[in-house]
Length: 79
Image 1 (cartoon, rainbow, N blue to C red):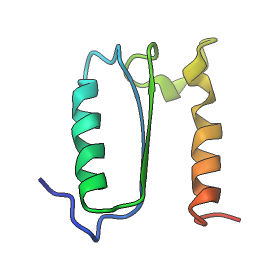
Image 2 (image 1 turned 90 degrees about the vertical axis):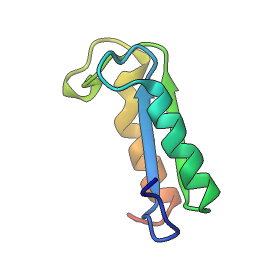
Image 3 (image 1 turned 60 degrees about the vertical axis):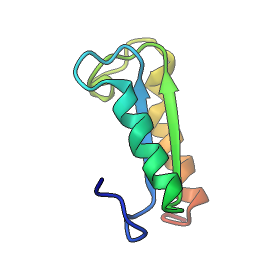
Image 4 (image 1 turned 135 degrees about the horizontal axis):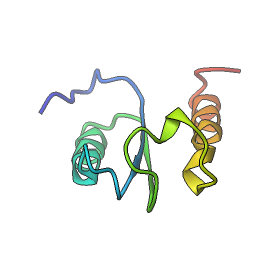
C-alpha cells in the first residue's frame, strides 16, 4: 500500500522457509513495485530461513551478496 512511482529501485531476496516473514509478503511487495514501474528484482531461495545474511551455512542463499553487487551494477548504483 506504500509503494509509489517514487519508491527507489528495490532488490528483494527471500527464502521460502522464513518462519518470521512469510514469503508471500515479498511477492506482494514485488507485485506492487512492478505495478508502479519501479525497477525491481526478486530472488527466492528454498532454504535460508530468516536472517540468512548473518553467516554462511553452505547454502545457495550464501551467495546473496553477489546478487546484490550485480543488481547495484546493473542499475548503475555502483560502478
